[in-house]
Amino acid sequence: MRLDAAIADAAVRLSRISDSARLDAEILLCQTIDMPRSYLFAHPEDELDSLTLNRFEVLMQRRLNGEPMSYITGTREFWSHQLLVSRATLVPRPETELLVELALRAIPRNAEWQILDLGTGSGAIAIAIAAERVMCTVTATDISAEALAVARENVRHTDLSNVICLLGSWTAPVAGLTYNVIVSNPPYVRDNDEALRNLTYEPLSALVSGKDGLDDIRILASDSIGILAEGGWLMLEHGADQASDVADILSAAGWSDIRCHNDLAGKPRVTVARQNGK
Ligand code: GLN
Image (cartoon, rainbow, N blue to C red; front, side, top):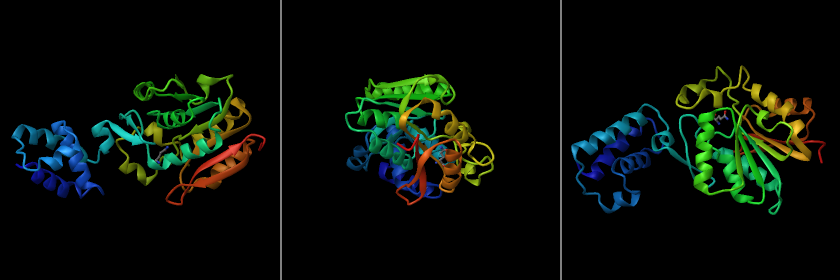
């Protein structure tokens, strides 16, 4: 079968499950033949042998079963960094870039601040901030040793010397230390949320947080206060319908200047709070 025909055929099949069927088909074929995408456009008439077609079909089946492209390719772009991901980590979402943006707005360009990313997963947020604020030290924690190994690998690839990865639950690995900005994209999905049906490939522990999805945000709201520098910030990603609950949790825990920010889709997704409102 010709290369262009294989792509066209795959794109039709993938359109059932993907909004980017043609792109997915091209990327999966590139992975199969270990060539860059430019090769596809330069050599549409290449004949694919049956062995190659079989290997392509294996990847096609994974995608048709709903596996995210990022797990099949093992990579995902976030804040223009090409990151490794595995099934031990969430696939970084574009909306999480709002959290990075807000953190960068708060951190002066030449600040030598201590930044903390709790539940770092692939390390996406920590790496994005560390690359933009090289004088800061970014500490990234995760309870999953497997996820932390992926984060460490990503830090190594990006050649950053200002990221420290620590294993442990939330603030446990950094007890007694002090931070100027604490960021987190914690699990916040309700345990009975319908959306989970489409997220079966991602680690539940990174997605789900009890009945109302707010268990971990409650922990973060109370545990972060003790390790925050005077006037420091806490920034939390959450679901679009959780802004007022998150504000209530934060104010009950003693936070002030609580403000929620909208993502590019206009949804309230990141809440920022300060200690003492300074
Ligand atoms: N934004 C993710 C989703 O709903 C959830 C990520 C999370 O729980 N931190 O697909």
